[in-house]
Length: 84
Ligand code: SF4
Image 1 (cartoon, helix red, strand yellow):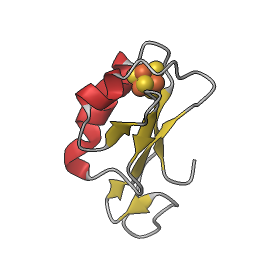
Image 2: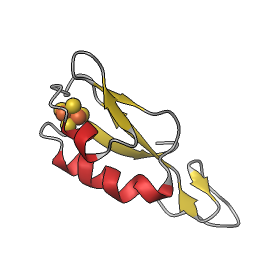
Image 3: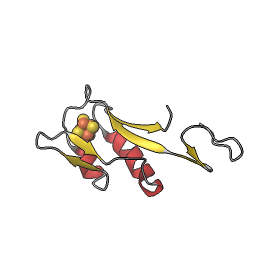
């Protein structure tokens, strides 16, 4: 999604895309890798399922979050632009 300064779309803040991290609970197997790779944003509950921080990812964490999503063995961890 492209963000244009004059006509921003949902999920765009100025010239940046706002990205949220989400977990598909149907696919998550409580592997825990996401919390190891992205401890700034993910912690695990008592059963080992991820609990994510609220709100959009800080820009500084987006690339790390992308790598964590790619490493998730079941592809349950998803990066989604706001408004998608
Ligand atoms: S790495 Fe994937 S499967 Fe493992 S806890 Fe995180 S979201 Fe669930």
